[in-house]
Length: 178
Length: 313
Ligand code: SF4
Ligand code: SF4
Image 1 (cartoon, each protein chain N blue to C red):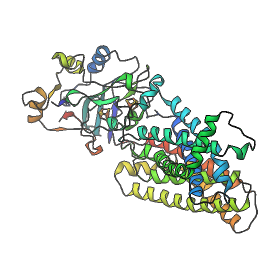
Image 2: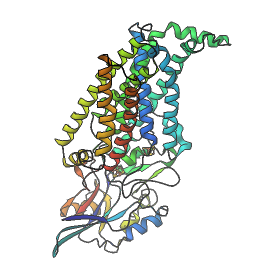
Image 3: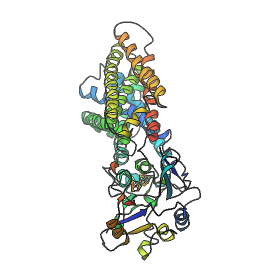
Image 4: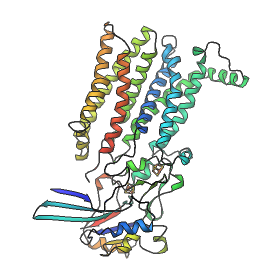
């Protein structure tokens, strides 16, 4: 099993509903977010191109954050989802410094927090992650890459895509459809 | 022109707009660890070489600083943790992939070993010292018998500790400035150099001071060589590494680095030590004080600049 997500940069309008849905679903403390929307503008007026991406932890297959965690609090859970066990985390910040995407943040309660792909609260119950299910343009696809019929496998078969900073060697599992 | 902005307004504390998860604690911890490693290395080395008589400060006196240095360093590390009550989790596993983990374990070896070392030499400070309890005397006799072994343990563990202070940073490929394996040997050399400087400061024996000034001079030479190599490596590497190097070559860290670390912390003390060895007399404490301050500033600059360096993103 290999959970992954694909975000369609052509459909995303940057409404930030995914950000709010995540904050509500996961009780993200005020002032923090586990996902965010990036807008890239390229070119000079009037020839401008824009790309909009909803980003979060990439649940990297070769994740530096898991590697550098001294206690094993950061770990690979079911389907390769990278999670933090709060009662094992000492809050040393090593994983925060090690993430090339700055996807983690120190939770005010002391431990480190980040996107979980809603693994325990939704995915295990057969639901999509909160961000995926709330998106008004349906631009996100989630599922198991080992299952050829999952929404994410299907869309990756038919579309061009990229990942972010693949040269960092992390093998990210968040795909952006182009 | 390409412009990337986070339109959903991400402002995660300590992450945005620029990573600042590590403050003064970590660089201080690394500096103290390196200094203690340097002092213990020389104590162990000259014990193994059988030169306790020639270098009494290095072998017997200077190590008295190390338990304090290491404890303050560990305290700084502890203060840096955000989830302090779970500190003990650090010592429930040993993860070789994580420098934070094996470094913490190295400290658990070095710190007690340094305390035992001091206990064996307590009579240098207090000639009439009495352990009062018989079992403590028995412990002392035991370790006295195996002093050479203890010296070997200290020698190896202090080298590991010294290298660790650099590897802690170099293991992070997310921060291009840190992501160079030269940082391990560089911080080790810097730690040994500050250790030698501390011995020069404490020693009352001219021949011992001269020996350590000579060692320090050599270590400073190695450090300068490694710094040049570090920049050569960055400039010949990828765009993100080139940008990391430019933090020091025209960027915001240029003046602090070249002025305080390279000039005041390395070149000038090297010159002073050289002149001193050539027989010019000057206040001998200036060079070692500069070396120690330079080492401290060096750790701070690398810790802060590293967090400012990132991937194209
Ligand atoms: S994106 Fe960052 S936090 Fe997420 S798995 Fe990769 S390295 Fe770890
Ligand atoms: S902050 Fe927590 S999860 Fe991150 S490396 Fe340290 S112990 Fe592991």
